[in-house]
Amino acid sequence: AQSVTQLGSHVSVSEGALVLLRCNYSSSVPPYLFWYVQYPNQGLQLLLKYTSAATLVKGINGFEAEFKKSETSFHLTKPSAHMSDAAEYFCAVSGGSQGNLIFGKGTKLSVKP
Amino acid sequence: NAGVMQNPRHLVRRRGQEARLRCSPMKGHSHVYWYRQLPEEGLKFMVYLQKENIIDESGMPKERFSAEFPKEGPSILRIQQVVRGDSAAYFCASSPAVGTPNTGELFFGEGSRLTVL
Image 1 (cartoon, each protein chain N blue to C red):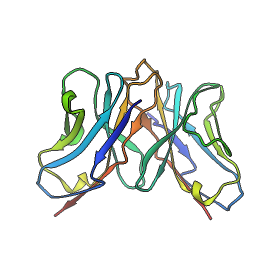
Image 2: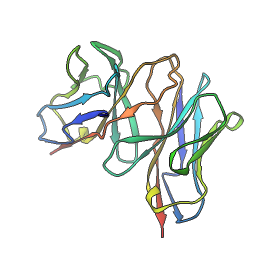
Image 3: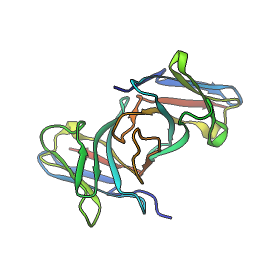
């Protein structure tokens, strides 16, 4: 069975600082991993996905994530936070025989001026 | 280039009433998923449907909840005799096809927010 753990339900950074959102997964099969972003009162938008190609994945808005099998991690980073990055971020895993994704509980990112 | 369309965006019901939430997938997509989002709990998978078939309903409550995706028309999530605990945001997502395992992303609608008074 697949599962996702996101460490830290709230993260606050200053504008221009590094963003690091943590995600650890558990999967009985080779995982496919996703990061989604949700702005207030909106749906989820895909940031990036890992599907067994390069372990460093680049996404939209300057975000990237690195798949580390030995650590079962898929942490999301951005070198310099912008005010517009304030949102909730969800890590998700698939890999089962069905199509659904399993989501973590989310991390709310606040960006201080 | 319409995305996943959900309606209504907001729905208010009194306890005991029925709620119907609709979802039209993206053009060309034949797979629909419903998720429920409660504060501080992330998204919980409810059900996965293809046209006229329920593929996986392992996340659906055993009572009062049902879902369908008819040959024609949108997918519908139906909640009978709503209770206050049903208040949540319900998201629909679609995908064009499913590999084994699924390597593709899901495309989400903007959600339907149900409030039960």
